[in-house]
Length: 282
Ligand SMILES: C[S@@+](CC[C@H](N)C(=O)[O-])C[C@H]1O[C@@H](n2cnc3c(N)ncnc32)[C@H](O)[C@@H]1O
Image (tube, rainbow, N blue to C red; front, side):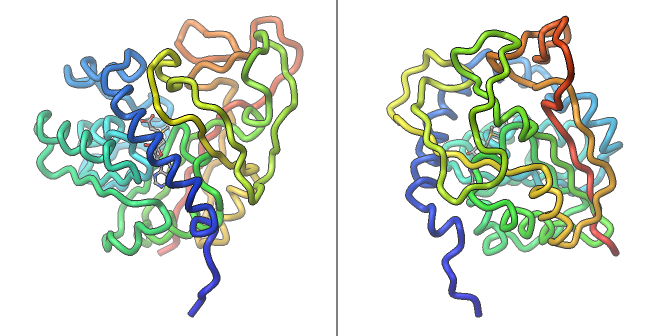
């Protein structure tokens, strides 16, 4: 038996602080225009068209959504016909997700409160699709531990899908820079100690009053992410890189389609977002 402390054990105070922050952010996000909960209540689906195209039909599939926040992406998959389970470490987020599932008529949607690393201790099932997206990996101290949990929950023959900000975009300074000003600032590869940043409201509403003062994050290179998934037993089917981010970064400008891109006229190109589709062998 392995008694070595895991990266999550070693980083427990940082993860606990992040969890309190996410509890506070959940209340901010519930009423934010960023999340447009009214639009979702009215029948919206928040999964991006490129994700739906890459994953294909989910009707009747069992889907586990890791780091589901307050469940509106999870319930979007339910609206597309999936039988959904969401998991998140924030009790406030899970409580709101459960409330939304009840209000919006998804009695079979399940939401579980757990950190990623402890999820196998509280959830037994295996899934046709494990899904996670948009601002998830930077909260995790160890990408190999994460990949093992991902692979654990994929049924043989089932699939895993991730879409996330590109580690190259994460390495660039995002504050007090002009559109097109690309200033290399942060690590690209995983580092044992977190980077700590002051909290200013939330990404959904920087003016919101929040008591938490710090957030803690980790970086993971694309090679580390892909290799961890392969070592955990998944076969990578596609790895796609995109020239946009799904949210505002100061060095980008907003495009007509609502994504954020390098300003028109920029010389050269960079990947800013990516997706991975993987499969577990039968
Ligand atoms: C940016 S949100 C998820 C993105 C989601 N697509 C959205 O925009 O609603 C990140 C989520 O990760 C959760 N989280 C952060 N660290 C976690 C951990 N170690 N274990 C489980 N959940 C975690 C947070 O509570 C939060 O709900």
